[in-house]
Amino acid sequence: MMGPIGKKLRWPHLLVIFAIAAMLVPITLFSSTEEAEAQSTGGEAGAPLTLSESYMFIREGMEMSPQAFSTGAETQSHLIPNGWRSTGLLGFGILKRYGRTEWMEVGTWTSKPLRERLYLGGKVTFAIWAYNEEYGVQSDFEFIILKGGEQNPLVSVTVNNKALSTDSNAPTKIQASVNFPPGNDTMIDGGETMAFKLMARCNGGATLAFGTPTYHSGFAFSSNALTIHSIYMDETAVTCEYKDAFLVPWVTMKTDATIDNVGLLDEHRTSQMNIVNGTRELIWEGEYSYGNHEIAVSLSYDPEGTRNVSKVVNVKISRPEVNTFRQIWNTLKSNLVVIILVILLIVAFFFYVRHRKKLWRRRFRSLPPEGQSLKKRKKKKMWKRIRKQEKKQKKARKKMDREEIEETETGGEGGFSLFKKKNRGPRVEKVQAVDDSVFEDLDFD
Image 1: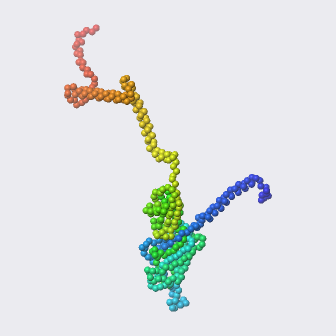
Image 2: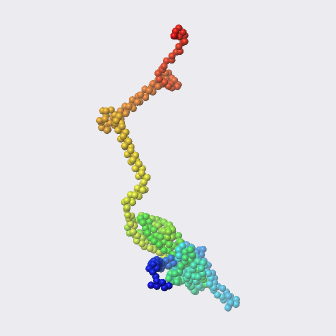
Image 3: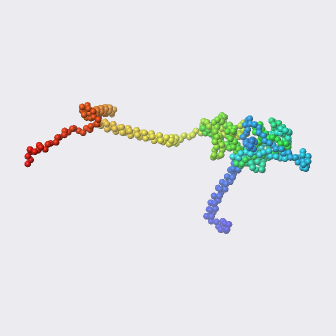
């Protein structure tokens, strides 16, 4: 076998080539597997398999939200500008009744910055209500959805020659529908806003009505704005994790949950954020039994529960396996201080009993010979009786000594002495001094 430069390849070279190939093949397979998984699951940039319908309502302050209006809300209004421009006949300024109607922007409503990437697809349906109280007018409308801050529309549709009502209590409904580009590839990244732009070509101006469940000006669309991530439970709680791109307050949403076809009460519902996977958790606390359970959860932006997303799962709560050794160890570990105290008390009691036995043996040896042959119980009685007699004798001696001391202090005649006299032993008579004259008649050698 010859190499590219004409030299024969030896077996060490082949071994090196084989080792390099062995390292490259797994890397290639791993990369191709990752690409296949990303394509099959949608990856980070892939669109979800299903989209759910939501409705976007325009609101005051040029804002819009999927949160529906409450019953009893008052109708809001917004001016549709007059697009009539008088140009005169052929543009020469004569015959002012001649002119043209131009397109005018009614307004652009935007959502809050999205929390998650929003995928849009399928059909979008627009609906607005408009009227002119003075006289009937004809108007054209253009509905546009775009990313906030951009000019290129994601989708748009035009409605022509709509005659508007002159009754403010019965405005004209203008509808239009259009489809997003196929493939569910239309998206708005997290942090960006979604915008709705309304254009009108109205030859006399008009008023846009919105803000109530009846006059819900806005548009219905399909997206992944609201999705249920996962549902699970244990003995104390049922938890539903969901994602909401528009950050609608969870307390205003319609949530229905059942376990084995028994409804869970909203009074037992709490919520918290899961910072690990970025979902919001709805938690129904309670006491749930072991075994298999069917849990169904439905979420909706609308208080009436329309356009909801739902999920049904089967969950099994298994009894915890009891490990006797581990259970004993945990019990001992959690009560270690108490156990040490009990052991110390037992040891102390043992030494106390031992000490008492030695003490009684010493006491028994002090009994007279006739008491040595008695039984233990009788020995104790005898020792206590002797001890009692000794205490009486000792008490009598102390009394006698005290009487003697009192007699000494009072001088023996019942007198009273202020100071206590010390007992210094038997009294010794003083020897009188001897006169030297007795020695004068004595003759000493």
